[in-house]
Length: 383
Image (cartoon, rainbow, N blue to C red; front, side, top):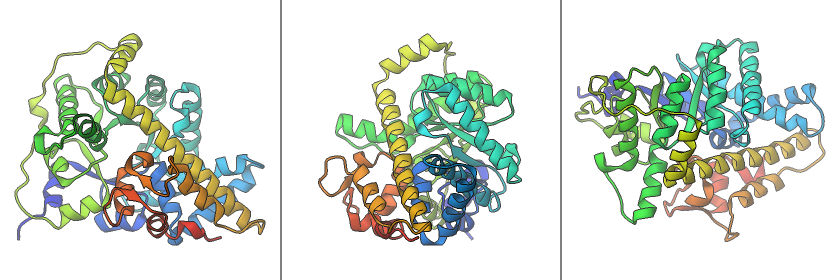
């Protein structure tokens, strides 16, 4: 019987599920799983996870008071989803630090240690948890310190070679170059599409992978944020690939030959000496990396703010103080920047995998009805 593309890919690359949905993880059985604020927010709206959300809120109410309850609940919710995911996958789960701390080394360190302490209190080994941190200079320095403490890190929002080199020199465990978002930028910039090996996102990951292998860096490369199966095929052989459920489904339902494209024996590149001055200079010169990093931090920060509003209302509803619904509508308004009643792909700025699932008619924008349906009746948030 012919093997599927997913079976062939899994033989040469570690497949990671890019989702917070337990059912999708159970279906595809990847080795690892990764989440981000957009994915956690989406999963938190699904009725089947209502108990997870409510338990996090009740736990947080015992730990803090006032506005701090919701902040504690978000940390707890991230860890609760992670602990449940670890019961399904044999490998690791990635949990993200609040994106609003992206330029705060001390704040990132404190948050990462707090999250890890909660994981360990829940019975998880730190070997099975990756702390996701944005690939700013400040974030990379925090990751360097955390790695020395045995807290392993996944450096996300990776768009430029300077970020990849700095992460390798810092000894981080894993980086997540955002293939699809790089493609998005070049498509918009040059008003054309790219396919196959010419895809700028594919080229970026290939260059990073080859550089790491040539110079023996132990940091793993995990391609992320895919727009289509073609990008995944071109990166077969990469250390890891984190893939959203719709694309996993396509791979699982497609047969044919899948040749290895990336090979550790074919390392290449010229060594780049990296320090803070060089990093910042290269970042300023790389307009794509600069814009996409800023956009990514903004998008993940918006997702956190939206989740805070949703949890605030749900907490009030749990105590009988408010009727659920207003915060969910505010969630929509938070992303509808121009107030036209729709959320465009650019306005969303969060996980494009989530956007693709929610955009049921494929018109590149989300209506209130699509958001409500896709997020489990988000506009009638149930108490």
